[in-house]
Length: 431
Ligand SMILES: C[S@@+](CC[C@H](N)C(=O)[O-])C[C@H]1O[C@@H](n2cnc3c(N)ncnc32)[C@H](O)[C@@H]1O
Figure (cartoon, rainbow, N blue to C red):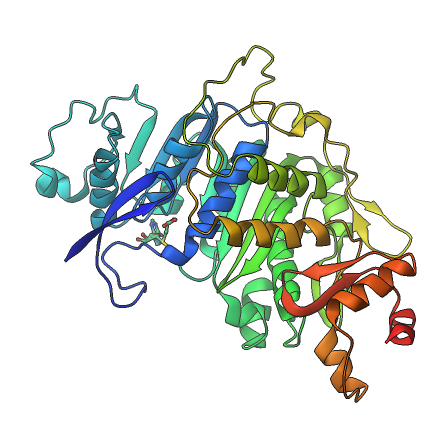
């Protein structure tokens, strides 16, 4: 039994499944809507034009179809959908048609075209199209390409098997987006697996999701450094059952050395990334873009692309060198003037599904991104350790910390956590 699902501006036809799993004929997970929403928001916020986008693990095609429908005009130069499953590729083709996108190039036919015989489209193998469909192993697909400005890796489980080819094919100043659902290894349920796969020791405690994210970031950065590509996280998070990181890729030995200087131990775990998890200016912009454009219905024309400086504006000259801070934390200067899209009135979130949830999530990240601290305090952990019968409300503690002149905010990693730059002893004195 098939059903038609609407997500954002896209519709897809998908086989009904009792359980979302790898075993599905063609994979579609509604829980990952937020993952796709954030990708669209981020790409609409930064000054990216004429992007060459690669979706090496495209599944049902939902992400790419949403990109085509929801990214601002002028953003996409080309988009390549790839999946090694013939059924997935057939689903991508029929879902594109369902969305009235009928001009695309199929570079190699699944099942030698047998299952597509009813599909009559002149666009097949017409190299002029900017929508390309490919049915190969994802690593082959990437390595056979001349490269992309945006590569989105969204596998079942670990992202490890895709890192080498994706990093080789991500362009200078390009964005590499990585999803990883290997949470059991990264959060310390299987510490040996984490050491084996991510070259780092995890720790299973209240901070395990932040630790896991930082371990994952370092692992990906290490692969980048081999090719003199410095990968700076510009937006990252943990949610539901997965980690997600957007890296900006900058080329250069010195920058790689700076990345390496940002690796170290924390809370008896690691080595892990001790630098920023977010570019706080970017998070601010994403948040305000979302507030301003929650439900605009029309795609409005971009007024002018005259001043286009090419992909990602001037970002290439405005790298984010990591610098050592007095407290031992690493920060990226927020001096990226032309990092953000100047395109006005583009559509951001085209419908209201989960809008409030996304807004709340982004607000938490926006607030915590301003705090120069690795790790966070956990109120129930402190209460347990200090045998406190009752603890103050989190909001009251945050207020008290701020009154003392420190920064404090909720963290998206934990409902009982507070991210703050207040030293341990000073916080204890407040409780
Ligand atoms: C988690 S799904 C992708 C979901 C999709 N990106 C989305 O947003 O809905 C992973 C997809 O990768 C495909 N896949 C897994 N390993 C692959 C490989 N080595 N080469 C190409 N495709 C692969 C699977 O067939 C599956 O469709």
